[in-house]
Image (cartoon, rainbow, N blue to C red; front, side):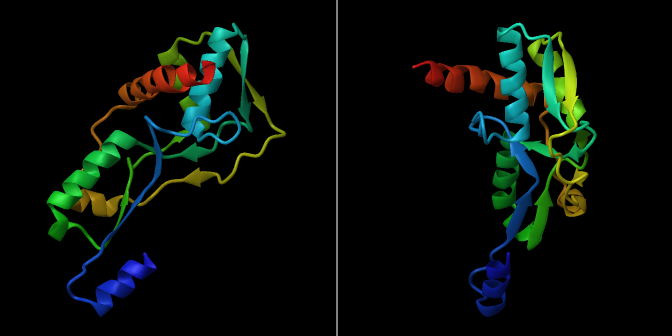
Length: 172
């Protein structure tokens, strides 16, 4: 951001712009057992609970903290649109959904999509992080762009990728 602003002031030929997405998820996400991102971690945990016939899935903290996530396919669509309409793009713009959900909401949504029928248990000894992480998307509204993939479709696409690419490779 700072470098782009500096170049913009010094050189009229290079008009860099900065796009800052909220948390992203989807295909090619980090599904690592120890270092995965939230949605990828939930998919892995819930999938394993189904396979292992576990009655409970553990959630860190009370599950009340809120997070905003954007499906990576929608972010790619935004980048394509931003390139097409580069002159209209503000010099700095956040890209997100404009809403956030609780960690519990993500667990319930993913569990419903994957077909998990068990219960959840909160581990209040585990860290939870900031109470809320959401970006200001007001400039996005003026740019007249919004994400088009609903969370159910995005989770299904992400889960399909997980099954076909991550699990398959882990078994080899």
